[in-house]
Image (cartoon, rainbow, N blue to C red; front, side, top):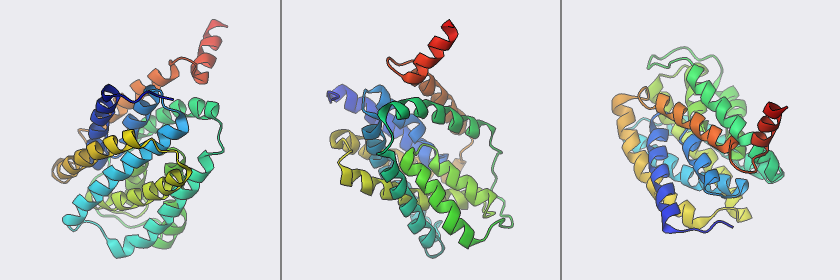
Length: 265
């Protein structure tokens, strides 16, 4: 069991503030907070559950900020949000059946994959285009699938929603960014409901990080409307790669041990 002291709490609060700020602009704040929780020595399932608590705070904060500017389509997005919620809850239920060693092995790989995707993904603009899929397809298939990913792992889910709205629904970047926060908050709450029911959340850390993430997301949402995501994304990708490597090289990480044994061979 990790010893929770003021140094750990303040460090994680600072990380959550930055993650909330990044997440409101470009998405992917969990790419920073989740590795930080792992490096603090927290069990993988507890780390994912605790991270979901602060992530929900950040996405709810950003959703409120965008809603105040009239940028969220509540009526059209409500069915999508419901399916996203169910996907997040199902994903959170599934993670309980994965062994700890599997999570320690998989998480760094997922972080690198997600960061690589962000690095190679096409640049998005604010031009409205023709939708490639119907609202029904997006609601029934895309929203719950991305929500499921959020429940199982989570980092980058806001960006995946944003890219899906742009590429599949033809929305401009600002509108897509706003609507993605609504769906992101929904799947966060779905997963959080399951994690809270299972008692997997470390509340002192979760509450501290949630407060910091809320403030960071408020500032980030204001910057998103004004400047966009192009300044934040490169920094997010760099931090993600660094933390993934740090996780791999941590003591007792099975992926790191496998890589070392291969090099020695």
